[in-house]
Every structure is written in structure tokens, then in C-alpha cells.
Amino acid sequence: MSKNLLTAPNGGKTILEVGPVRIGGEEIVLIAGPCAVESEEQLTQSGLHLKKAGVSILRASAYKPRTSPYSFQGHGLEGLKMHKEAQKKHGLLTSSEVMDPRLVQEAAEHVDILWIGARNMQNFDLLKEVGKCGKPIILKRGASATVEEWIMSAEYIMAHGNPNVILCERGIRTFETSTRYTLDLSAVAMARLKTHLPIIVDPSHAAGRTDILDVLCKAAIAIGADGLIVEAHPNPKESVCDAAQALSLEQFEEIAKGLKPLAESVGRKICL
Ligand code: PEP
Ligand code: MN
Image 1 (cartoon, rainbow, N blue to C red):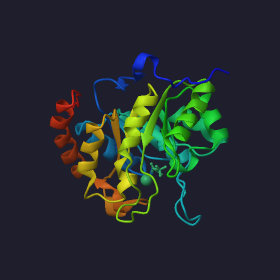
Image 2: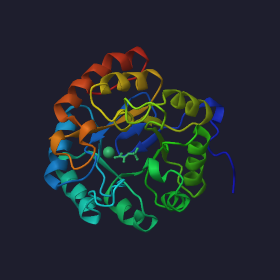
Image 3: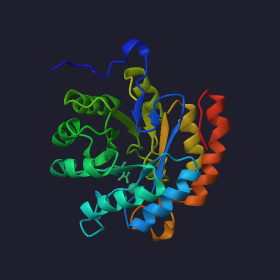
Image 4: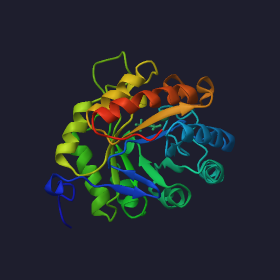
């Protein structure tokens, strides 16, 4: 098996084409949506609103890794079906986390992009399985993973046949308690030096709050991220998980508008 699939070829960048969306090109890709799939109605409402706010990929997971076994674990296959139905109305690309190697195929049949959550970044059997599934994979960085470990996990997916990997920085565990995690933007710059893959940033899970989301989004774009993945919910207070960090759809729209000038100032485009 060849090594170092991730070494940037001549310093170039890979652009992934997923349906009509190009990830890693000039345009900043906006991914947003609820933490979890709750209902078809919730997905439709989110998708229709977020589409107008410049989002091209709807996030919402059918499977939820929860700290407590008594918390909502996700709707599973039913949730994936809700994604399919809602997509007929909103028309965006869809995405969900996958956690179980045995369920990768069923997820791949229902959504356009899969993601590996921070807690599973080094679940090597899962990485191998998504390497075979033929769908683009967002690989979130583990909360305690070094940049090198993160990159080697991407290498696992690629070495098993899937070159379509998007790296996602989502905050690391530090001594700081004012935010849920610490957004490590230098990791974006380091991953850029070491790989040719698209890199996106998740400020929602890093901050665990909404009041600094706008500046974190701007900082991510300024440092060279290719996109953002943000939690936004039609009724944040009612969100079944991660309510404290969920923006309303209107708040997301406001933040997205403010990103346009910043994106242009660093030579990127953002279509709103
Ligand atoms: C999520 O995206 O909802 C999530 C659980 O993120 P992370 O794996 O980064 O904690
Ligand atoms: Mn979440």
C-alpha cells in the first residue's frame, strides 16, 4: 500500500466536486443545519431557509454519539429516510455522521456526504469502511488528536480507496473552560502545509455557545479554511442536542451575510 497520499502535490490543492458543489476551490462552502435529525419537517424548514442564506450542504445527524447513554441517540435509519424525503423539497446536498462500520452502507445510500465525528477519528475499522463507501467524507479532528494523527486518519480513508476526504477542525480539549473546546486555527494552517485536501472549520462545537460564532467564522476564513460547518436550528431552545450552541436560522443568515466582504478580502468567493 502506498504511503503519503496526502503529501501536497506541488503544493496544489484538491478540489472535490460533489454534485453542483465544489469544495476546496475559490468558493467558501457553507454547511449548516441542526445537530440531529429530529423530523422531516425540521429538515425541510432548515433546508429551505438555509439555502436562501447561501448554504449548499445541510447537516443533521441520524446517529448521535452522546456522553450519556440515556440521552437521545438519533433516529437512525428513520432519520436517514427523513433526509431523503426532505431533500425532495429543499434540494440541498445532505450529510450525517456515521458511527458504526456496519451501518456505513445504509447511510451512504441515503445522504450525499458522511462525516466521522471527533470521538471516532481513530476508529480504524470505521475509517476503513468509509474508505470503501464511495461517498465524500468529512473527517473531524479528535478533541485530543495531534495534526499528524488527524492526517494519518485521513490517510486511512484514502488508502482504502476513497480520495474524497475533507478535514474538519472542531476544537481541541485544553485547560480553558470559557468555551466548550478551544478552536485550534493554527491546525488549519498546518494541515494546509501538509496536505492537499480541503479543510473546513466547525466553530459551533469548538465554542459551545453562539455569541462568538460570527468572529470565529471570520477567523476561520481569514486563516484559509475552505468552508464552515455550523449548527443552526429552526427553534434552538427546542434542539434535542447541543441547544446552547445552536444558532437560529435567522442568526445564521445574518452571520453569513457578514462573511462576504471578509471572504472577498482574502481572494475567496461566497455565494449568498
Ligand atoms: C456534531 O457535529 O454534531 C458532533 C457531534 O461533532 P463532534 O464530533 O465534532 O463533537
Ligand atoms: Mn452537535
